[in-house]
Structures are given as structure tokens and as C-alpha cells.
Image (cartoon, rainbow, N blue to C red; front, side, top):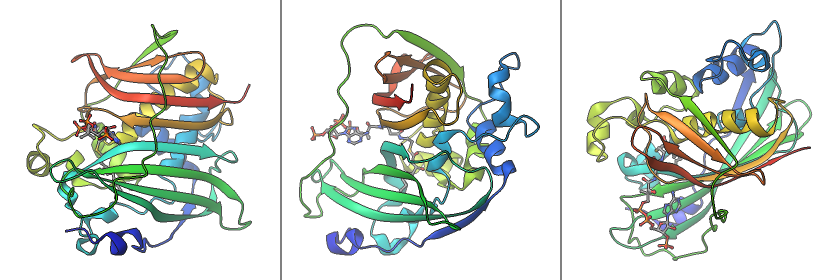
Length: 283
Ligand SMILES: CCCCCCC[C@@H](O)CC(=O)SCCNC(=O)CCNC(=O)[C@H](O)C(C)(C)COP(=O)(O)OP(=O)(O)OC[C@H]1O[C@@H](n2cnc3c(N)ncnc32)[C@H](O)[C@@H]1OP(=O)(O)O
């Protein structure tokens, strides 16, 4: 059972991480870069002789504190946790090497009621350990499906981005691989929901589901290709809502509007899996 004050003030250990070019290349491969060998614009992300360049969405794994919700002291029913929303703000291009610090804290907790779940808001700041410079700020909404009705406040909630009417301007299909979650988790995202059929069944899914942040990486790839010409410094901000699970092996179709709005659907099931997306790219 969640204790509102205890969880709001839960201390998440700071993470010091020494990055190498290999981490950046691994991250890019784990979200599916390199699957189009004829597009040389991807090369700096996956081959160090041309780079290294860092996919800006890597901010979600740099300085990541791991699946801390599984600590029984949080009071969270960890098996029922799903990723609800993600926000990223890049203050500077991410470094391919050097020491960084990730500091994560809980910023809000909303009770949606018994049987409806709860929202946990958290924020992570990534700084350069040598200079103290702030590199990126990321924000997560975690949907605690098993924890509604603990007597907490019903707001405030962060409103989802509005979506445009009508058809998207650009559509990009990118595949995921059956074994993708096994790779993606090596970025430090080790929730067993994504690889263990028994845990997935306990969580109410017929098979393990893909990490929301892996889906975010695939969608960011589509956005970088269409709105950022694969330039690592072009993406400034991104936010989205995960509206339905993706199963590894499915094809993700990202639907993009030229003003930066986007959503994504799984082609095989025609289900919208990412909604209320918005990305900001530098000109
Ligand atoms: C703490 C540790 C940090 C680490 C956490 C991350 C660990 C990861 O390893 C876990 C993952 O990656 S899970 C994979 C990615 N996520 C998903 O697949 C979830 C997809 N979304 C869903 O299943 C449903 O939208 C679902 C279930 C989220 C909601 O569905 P419903 O209950 O049917 O909701 P609905 O009836 O549509 O709406 C009810 C109210 O909830 C709000 N809402 C809906 N989807 C939301 C979402 N994704 N995020 C935030 N709020 C959301 C609605 O606005 C509505 O609000 P209100 O009651 O105010 O009208």
C-alpha cells in the first residue's frame, strides 16, 4: 500500500556513469538504428569510424536509476506498473564519453481512485560530472495500475499535448525485432515485465511487452529522419503518451505532422500505441 508522504519523498540514489562511445552505439542499435544500410546518415550513430554521435533520446537511459519501483519500501505494486508518459528536454548535445550524473526525484503523485490506478511523476536531471553543466532533463509519468485508492490527491495532472485534426503529413514504418527487449534492457532498463512470460502474465499481458522507452526510441528515429535530417543536435524537446502496449516484433508506424505533432500505431493490429506526441526541432 502506498504511503503518500513516504513515496513523494522517496530517495532515489544518484547515478554516476562513465559513458563510452560503445554505450552510445549500443543504445542506437537497441532502438533499431542501422537497419537501413543504404542511409549513410545513420552511420555516425552506429559506427565509431564516422562518429560517435549520440541519439538525443539516449537521455532516457543515461544516469537511469533502474527499476526502483520494485523496492518494497516504495509500497508500489511493481508488477502492475506501466510507463504512461515521457518528456525530454535537451539543454546541450549529449556526450559520447565522459562522466555524467543522473539525479532522479519524485515530483508528484496522483490518486485516480480504487481500481483506476495512480500516477507517479518523476524528473531526472543529467549533468556533466566535470563541469556541473546541465545536459538534459527528463520527466516520466508512471501509471501505477495496482495502487489506486490510497487516499492521495486527484491532481494536479500534466495535460496531454493536443493533437491536430486530419491526416498526418508524413508516415514512417520501422520494424522492431522479436528479441529487441533483451537488447534494450542492457541499457539499464531491467524491468522483467519485458522479457519474462510469467511476470507478463501476472501483469495481465499474453506475452512480454516492449519497454515504452524502446518504443520512444523507435519513434524518435522516425522523427529525426523526417524533421531533423539525422542531426544529433537538432532535437530540443519531445513528449508523448503511451496509449497501448507494443509487442516485440511488431512494426511501428509513426504519423507525423509538420508542426511537430505525432502519434504511432502498430501496423499489424492497427492500434494507436503512442499518442499526444510533440517534438521540437531546431531549424
Ligand atoms: C516508478 C518507476 C519508474 C519506471 C516505470 C517504467 C517501467 C517500464 O519498464 C514499464 C514499461 O515500459 S510498460 C510499456 C509502455 N507502456 C505501456 O504499454 C502502457 C500503454 N498504455 C496503456 O496500457 C493504457 O493507456 C493505461 C493502462 C496506461 C491507461 O488505460 P486506462 O486505464 O484504460 O485509461 P483510460 O480509461 O484511457 O483513461 C483513464 C484516465 O487515465 C488517463 N490516462 C490514460 N492513459 C494515460 C497515460 N498513458 N498516462 C497518463 N495518464 C493516462 C486519462 O487521461 C484518464 O484521465 P481522467 O480520469 O482524468 O479522465
